[in-house]
Image: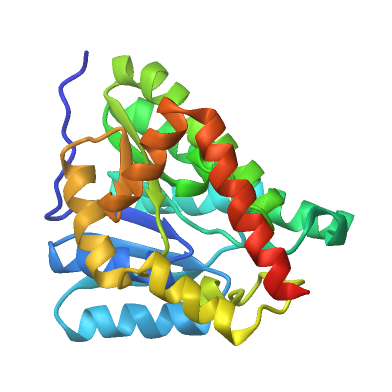
Length: 281
């Protein structure tokens, strides 16, 4: 195995997709505090510029770039440009994602295509571009964002769950293949984080309008974590080369329920779905 030259995190070169807001922005800010050179890649270039300017104002290193992760050529060009300009690529956080909230019967073909293209193909494009560079240089760390939805049954998020299952499996398999080349792979499984995605996000869609009481109950029961605190915890675990990163940690309860008793997991999901439908009727 080649000797790793991975930097953690001082002077590390890091690409973050979906880096303009939410989890991506929080990761960029925390990594910059730890001395990394972060590239915030996003379609929301104004927000990315704002985030990069804020990081630089506080003494960090950051650059904002426009990127559509569904464009394979653009992703590959960004990775190659960063590598050419900086001479290395330590990390890529394939974080960009969207959600369409609604029952399967409400989802159009276009809804499915949009979610698949961003959440799955976007990750594949990032992996494909960065992995070849990292194998060439003999080190690197690919960090993909999946979800706690990969070990739960989550009604109303069918397309989102499908893509996150795929990212989860991709990441675990690539971790084994990548090790002999000196490349690390981790997958982040966020619980509920206080970001714009909770209200659909810039590019997502809500097909069912939830009553205020349902939203208030969700806020109480799921205890959304502040993205800044989330980023701190995740980055610590990435530094330790954890394979599967579940934050907040209390969501591990659902991981274990699914592994120990699948019937119990389905029962709880059916109960939750029944309650949701009752409130919507």
